[in-house]
Amino acid sequence: MNYFLYSTLIQDRNGWKKYMLPSDKKRKRLIKISAKTSPHYGKYLEEMSVEELLNNGFINLDKPSGPTSHQVVAWVKEILEIDKAGHGGTLDPGVTGVLPIALGDATRALQVLLLAGKEYVGIMKLHKNIEKNKIKEICKGVVGEIYQTPPLRSAVKRVRRKRQIYYFEIIQIKGSEVLFRVGCEAGTYIRTLCVDIGKRLGCRAHLAELRRTRVGNLSDEDSVTLQDVKDAYTFWKEENDETEIRSKILPTRKLLDHLPKIVIRDSAVDALCHGANLAIPGIVEIDTDIKKDDLAAVLTLKDEGVALVNVLMSTEQIIQKDSGICATLERVLMNKGTYPSIWKKT
Image 1: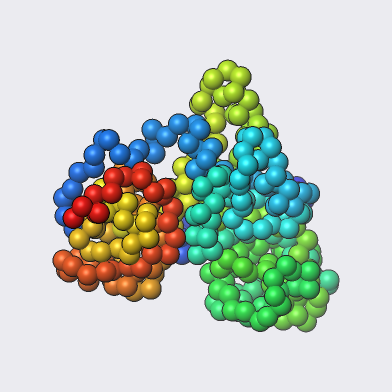
Image 2: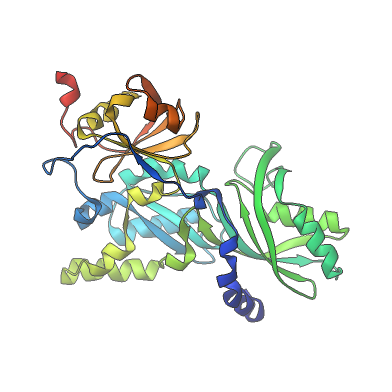
């Protein structure tokens, strides 16, 4: 990104807080019933060992320009000496920014990022100079529902699809270069969006540079580089210093931050781990504004991720009822046996 536009971007960052992705929605936690957790099962997030983080954590990585997302994942596996890792949302080789990389069992949770809105900052190059007010007017018009067909070189099937643009802000216009910031639904092609804007302007346009600045609640302000990860791992292995690596590898639970939450009692945990649906008697706490068909994260009283569920009732209905199935299981995140199988005895 050229220096002039990049410096403008940095200066303007504090003014961006007014723009929101769906993950910025604030919820309150309601207590349905009082319950305590046993110290003998599970583990608070801050108590996780480095070895556990390496098998059930993730890295908010700042992808460099050049390599593919797949290559970056391969380098992370090599640096950390692990066999399994995966990324949450492909970035083209020339694109930089937030690339969540899940380690080991944390790859089970990567699907949640499909519901996390994404934010990009980029430079759109117009093929001729256009009056600034017209550019602003056309760019305002892309906010809302749009239809896109994936580009020819895309790895997915080329069918027309609907995507949501949450906001499109023009930060600066310098000649034929437009520095913009866009918040959008996962799966939106920013390169295609720039081409479509060019057509609306009556001139051609293309994406010159792009950086992903957010995936849900994960921001590039908090991201780390490959060198950071390598240094942290070396300090831990050679000097037994855990400080740096604990700040670079985060618990999987934080991948769930953008989802509504349901907290369950210890006795209900292992049932979900064995494939059971969620029954109301197992619920201790629940977030506000949950609606039927929402995807929610089920947590333990120690804040561990247990499972992802499709909710069958609203928050109000779950609070008012004492029995019944309120959510169907979508994906198990916790290993069986982490909590005792009390449910088998009752």
